[in-house]
Amino acid sequence: MMNSTFKKMLVFALAFSLGSLLCSSLIIGFLLEKKIYDRTQDTLVTKAGELNKEVELFLNGEISKETLKQTILLVQERDHIQVSIMTAGRDSLFVEENAAVQSWIGDVLNQKAHFAEVTFYKNDEIKMFIVGVPILVGNENKGAIFLYTPMKEAEGLVQEINQMIGLAVLLLFLPIVLISFFLSKKVTSPIVSMSETVRNISKGNFEKQVQLKGKDEFASLGAAINSMADRLAIIEQSRKRFIGEISHELRTPLTTIRSTLQGISDEILTVDEEEELIQISINEIKRISQLIDDLADLSALEEKAVILYKQKTSMTDLVEACILQLSLQAKQKEIIIEKEIEAEVLANVDIDRIRQVCINLLENAIKHSSPRATVKINLIQENDFIMINFENSGDEIPSHILPFLFDRFFKTDQSRTQKGNGLGLTIAKRIVELHGGDISVQSSEGKIRFTVKIPQELLTIRRIG
Image (cartoon, rainbow, N blue to C red):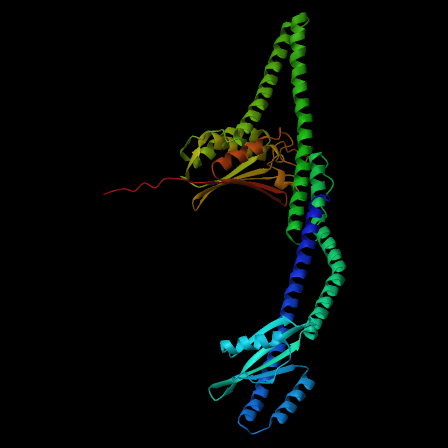
C-alpha cells in the first residue's frame, strides 16, 4: 500500500499544489506586468494631453517657440520621457534625430490616427514605449505629439517582481512537500490499517482491529470491518463448536450401530439383546436422518431453492393445532400453556412451513422453560400483518448474543439452542423471510419472547350486485 496508493497520493498532491502555485504565480506576474504597462501608457497619454494645450497655444501665437521648448524640456527632465512634435505640414518642432522614430511618426500621420502605440529598438538597442496623440485645434488635426520612454525601468520592475514570485515559490516548495507528505500519509494510513486487518481476517485472525479515529467515512468503514471481524469470529467459533458436537453426535450413534451389527455378525447376542439393540440403532438412524434433513432444508432455504405453496389459511386453527401437538410434552414438564388467540385470523402462507416455524419456537419455549412454568402464545392481526408471540420464563439471553441467535451453526451455553443442533432458529428465520416477514427476539427480566411477523397478503374480493 505504501508503495502504491501513498506514492500516488503524494505525487498527486505535489503536482496539484505546485501546479496551482505556478499557475497562480504566472497569472499574478502577467497581471502585474500588464498593470505596469497600462500605467506607463496612461502616464504618457496624460502628459501628451497636457502638452497638447501648450502646443495649441503656440499654434495660436499666444506663446513663443522658446517658451514651448522650455516647457517640453521641463517635462522631459521631470518625468524622464522624450517628446517629439510634428505639425500637419510635416514641420518638425521637436523630433529626435532617429530614423526609426521619424518613420514611425510619418506612418501615424499618414494614417491620421488619433492614437497609436508601438515598441521598437533604437540604435543602441534600448527598448522604447511610444505613445502618439493628435494635436487637435477644434475638430482639425494640426499634427501629433509623440511621447516615448525607455522600457528598462518598467521591465526592471517586472523582472524584480518575477524574481520575488520565483523566490516565494522556492520558499513554499519545502512546506508544500511536507504538507503533501503528511496529508497523503494521513489519508492512506487508515487504508493501510484496514488492509492489514482484512488480510488477518482472511487468515483466520480476528483479534486485530482497525484503530478508529474521528467520525469520517474511513472511521465508519473501519467500524464496519471491526463489526464484521467480531461477527466472523463468533461464527467461526460456532462453526468449530458445531463441527465438534456434530462429530460427537454422529460418532455415538455410528458406534452403537457398528457394535450392534458386529454383535449380530459374531452371534454373541441373545434374542432380547439383539432386538433391543436393533431398536436403538433404528432410533439413532432416525436422529442422523433428521440432522441431515435439517442441513439439506437449510441449504435449500438459503439458496432460495424452496417453492412456497401459499394458500388461504386460518392462522387461528394452525396455532391451535401446534399447541395441541406439543401439549403432551408440556404436560410432562408440568408447564402451563396460556394462549391469547384472535378468532378467524387469515393469511396467505405455506401451511407446512409456517407450522414448522411455530412448532420449533413453541418446542424451544417448552424445552427451555423451568418445570411448572408458564409459556404464553399470542396471535393478533395488526394492520396487514400477522403477529405471533412465544414467551417463556428462563435464563435471560445476554444482549450481545441476541443479534447472532439466528445465525447458522450458532450455539452457546447461554443460547436457546444449547440442546439442539443450532439449525432450528436459522431455518425458522429463513422460512419467515421467504414469506416477506421477520422474526425477532427480546430478552429481559427473565422473560424471553420470540415474535413472528408475516404479511397477511389476502386478496380482497369485491362483490357485484
